[in-house]
Image 1: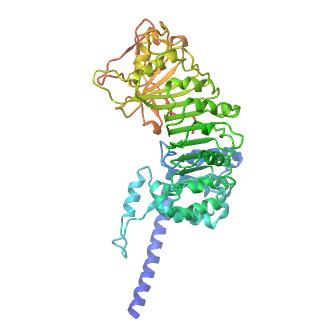
Image 2: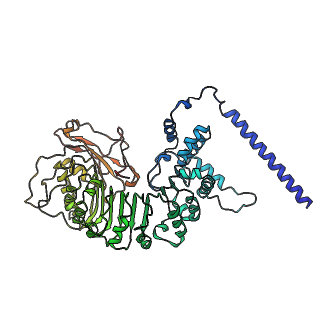
Image 3: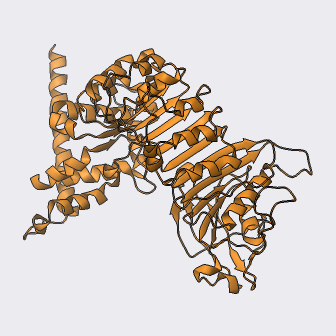
Length: 547
């Protein structure tokens, strides 16, 4: 006992001495490295509160991210989000006035990232791998889980800070492995609008029942939710439950429910503005039809239909028959549906407010012959026209070529005056558009009307990508009617660092247009068969108008 007491006393004295040495070292470093405080008036006291908050928002940009994107979708391109959050926390420690405004930003949109996106992560990772004297074989510290535990302790001890939190984002692996910790955290976040959740919660996995019950009971202001195959029972209970009345974004994937249950469930969300229907083979045109006994199909701003093979242009025309739908819908995405590209003109003719249209379709036959009206819209600004086909015999032209000829005919008919961004899955489309106008306006038959001497009379940003390419190739078009000089000069026009958003595959390659002296364009030869560029101009595009 005497030996153990002496050892305990010695260890205690040693730890006190070590702490004193560390404190003395920190004090010396602060006195030597840190500048002495400047004496004088504090000019920040004269700044209005909104100006001070605006300054803090530049310290930590992601603190103002009020979207409902996941942690992976909302990552910033430059900088380290953990370091930005640390700097904002340091601002909150300066004075009481700064603390009130900085805390409001610091706890509004919280991110828990797995690593530092800077050189600091190398140093911290090395420190986490060090073994202690008592645990030499232990695993390294789980940094994101430790950060979640610290945040959970903070908001549970201070309900005022918990009420400030509007969104909580965390990496995929952590939200899959920390379900109980997430449940304890969101139980004190009554004003939470978005939170990254494990995938099992959307399909009523038994391991997520406690977490789902917690979010249903405590977080009544959720704005984004998913329902997937397996959650048909929970989805069927939505009508009359008054659950998440402020929901704005809803995604349904693989559900097996009747059409009338879908209509009643969608009617429970009066503020719904973004609806995604994915992998619903039973979903057909009758779901859009007007009924005296069912709630109307919701008037959303963004509608996405994927893998719904029974939806046709006639059903969407019925959707637009209601004035509320015509006025509200601004973005429409059609992927693997029964809406044929030759019937797109019917949709555009009844959608006066549509600004973004995306059609992703695999075709097996050529564009139907006959006088098909061109694509015409005065509001459309963004068009994704991604038509592809299966491989055909050698020497036989691909069938999607006739679809892109129809698109060029629609563009040169100048029926899309507001269009500024065009995405196509044809690597040769820019050259076809700029160098060789199509010989016929509509259809593919020999009896089609001739279309001689027509050109596109509006600026257009063309993003093209072949089936074997991973990145989008950016080619700008500036017609002679805009007053540009590209049509009468042989000097190359170059672009530099034209970029796309992450959802479209990263940076885009650039193309160079060279005038041929006769109002047309010549392609600059390149080693890989495509024109390239360097230096000059920068452009950014997310490839999507509504997020």
